[in-house]
Length: 393
Image (cartoon, rainbow, N blue to C red; front, side, top):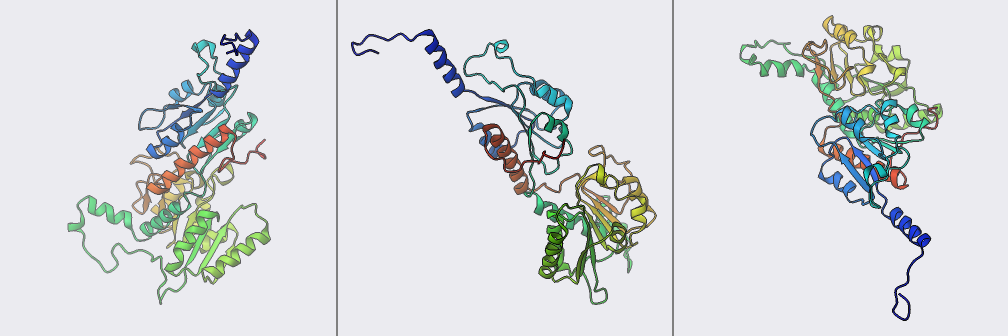
């Protein structure tokens, strides 16, 4: 308004500039969320006015067709382990949303020319094609560290259940057979995890010796563990690993802690924990040849990825008594594991449905981290946990 009270008319170029500025200020980014993350975490996303959320509405795995329909025009997506992020999806995700086709206003979502952020609520990211993501310049967030303790807890539980015939015992009770069970001096006995005066040595092996393996070792120390052996493909310098190993050996008062060849790991371990990453390099690393080298009283635990263990070979090892028992949280081909699966049919194999991270505390932290990764990636912040894609191409 002028000093005389008259209204100043803006020129058309100035009006256009002000409209553009207003539009940029109100720009929102489309985000696809493949599962409702609960009120605590969804509120973090809903509180960001910059985000336009599209959430899978049902309490079950997101349908592929729904994801493919909604990913075009999205700037970010939060996925679960069950959601395959491959070239097919990413090609859809790089389609820009045509605002004019949507009869959009200045406040409508504009996702930009391509998908920018993939955030997975998992520590593993085998379901994400990293090469395809790197080629498109995407950022991929994941949720390491927060599930270390939960997975370590479950690993010890599986070792105890498998060694002490827990699966057999539970099945006996649930089928109403306890009244008919005839007690015997060595009935339902199994190898003891803890040391005793008559059995004073316990050798624990780890296939993979990262954070989860080390947390599992710490939980086993009170059982009287005396030796720790491991095989690892860690890229850390040898002297760095040696320093770490010496520190852990002294900290846990072990007689030895050493990296060994994989054949020695199989031969010497009383309990062997499989806690290595998945992928082609570790596919069926535990096969028939490996299992035949193990002790007849040994127990195998897999809480990493099902593809590391040959299920048919493990079932045969249990059936023919090459090893004592097994506890698995993961199975190759899951969740397609029915009552006729060879491992499910083995009494001395305890199978649980991929629940290692399934504590209330851990899942809340994982969901929170997934949301934080997405928000930071879209709005230009530092993602709390980002997959390094620099060496993928």
